[in-house]
Amino acid sequence: MGNLHMTSEGLRRLLFSAVFAALLMLACRIPAAAAEEETHVVILATSDMHGNIWGWSYEDNAETDNDGMARLYTYIRQICEEDSAVFLIDGGDDLQGTILTDDIASKHPEDPHPVVAAMNYMGYDAMTLGNHEFDFGVPDMLKMLSTAEYPVLAQNVFDTSGNYLTGAGWTIIERGGVRLAVIGVVTPEVPRLDGNKAGVEDTVFESAAEAVQKAIAEIDGRADIVMVSAHMGLAAQYDEEGGSDSAQKILDMNPEIDVLQVGHLHITVNEKQGNTVIGGVRNAAREAARFDLTLDEDGQITDAEVTIVDMVDYEPSEEIREIPSVSEAHEKAIALAGGGSSEGGNAQGTGEASVVLGSTTARFQPENEITGIPEGKLRDTAVIDLILKVELENSGADVASAALFKDTSDLPEGDIYYGNIFDIYKYDNILYRVPVTGRELKDYMEWSACCYNQWSSGDINVSFEPDHPSYLYDMFGGVEYEVNLSKPEGERIENVYFHGEPLSDDQVLTLAVNNYRYASTLKAEDMIAGKPEWESSGSVRDMIVEYFAENSPVSPEVDGNWKISGIDLGEEDPRRAELISYINAGLLPVPYEKSYNLADYEDLAAQAEENRETESG
Image 1 (spheres, rainbow, N blue to C red):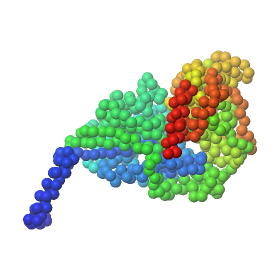
Image 2 (cartoon, rainbow, N blue to C red; image 1 turned 180 degrees about the horizontal axis):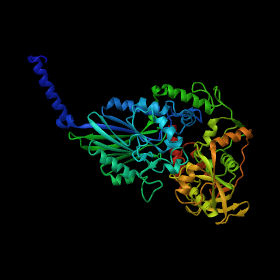
Image 3 (tube, rainbow, N blue to C red; image 1 turned 60 degrees about the horizontal axis):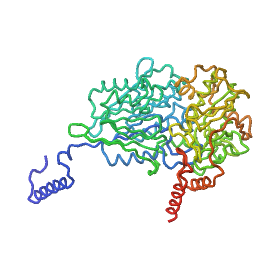
Image 4 (cartoon, rainbow, N blue to C red; image 1 turned 135 degrees about the vertical axis):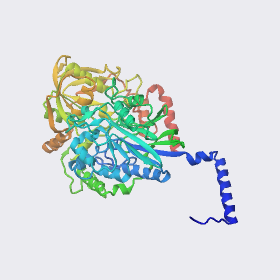
């Protein structure tokens, strides 16, 4: 029981310690009871990591400097060392997205998945199912997730027997005396996006808001904190009327939610509605959402806030990179992409498994006139025309559509490797041939042309609507047309010709379109009435690989079937050239989302010269 006697010296030290502690609390203005009884909780939330474990662009054979799960782990470990009650939650879309996941790990779903292995090592408490997990089909998806040491949540997804598809819809985690309930829901629009994948048609998807309501009733007050991890944005993406895929609808129906994580849209979200803190992060493990909550002695939340933390300042963890399944898949992905090895490899394919798929005679994209303003969205280019040609030849359709998935997509001169093909066609889409009327095709083209901002007199460049990114901008082959940017959205497509004749609204054509655009846009927004009359057995990316095998060397060809009209960028005005020189020198920000106008020339020139002086001095 210990020594019950105390010397005078011991008593003096005890009294001194008590007085010192009391003075310290007064100095910090913290009541003694609160200091002892308040509990601080940190919830770290990630989402849409899309297979980026290492922090590596396989198509570019280069390490990135601001993303990757390895960087996330460095940050996570730091927070865990600082706080005792730390929870780690993920919002889905993790098993897909890179050559490592899509072309290496997916070929052997029965083996330990490198993303799951990394998440196990990082200590995740729970993961919500994302829509891209279904890209591999339900049976293979479940195999990939079978080694997870954390529950995979899907409260609104069931198998044919009425059981949770992943085995769990919600979970309660206890740490540091705090009980956190996490409810996971995925957008119920998965059948639109992956309806052709194995097992999806036999899977039942329910409205997210109602599913969360059921879970909260089942939890029945057994948790101190209720968190919803929703793989969807706040606003409905498809079901605007019913809100079945809206995180806002979840919150409106369940105001007792303390923490709401959103995802799927790859955008930063940081807000508070009532007492609920809401956070969402960008993709590729670029950011983490940190939720800080304070609980009083009764377990009631007295304070809550959310911070979005950028990974740019964190060094990648070598521990994550050295996980055997991660390092092995990483080296195989580099080799497949044509980059050799991460240690001394190169973009010419020095690795043993690097395979030359074909060759080109020249680069396929023109140089950008203005840094950061992609010429591939301003005019017809050989990259898009190649994809459209492949789609038309394989489908036998009259017209075809394709997107430049990222602004920098290009094919270099010389040998072509898998990474180059992945660079111009990142997604594993299959191809449909669908009947459309002339009116439906024009409506589709108008939807695509919304990617541009309307041009105003004096604008020196074309700029782009930030809510309509590159992967949502389709260009079309098989028809000739103009995009008049002096007109508002919905009135821009003009002079549409098919085989040299004006395209009438009631004329029927066949359209080659990928399965994602067909489901998520053409059908989801009721643009067309027709259904696929043919679908490809392989992906569009596979078709491009086959084209290079059969036609190399491939020369860049541009048919110039479309152009932007209704604008005058003032190419002859020396002030425009001066402003462009400032942009290209980094003295003015890139006018990507808002054009520079000659009316603001003096202010812009003064700003550039001020930036020059700051840099030089």
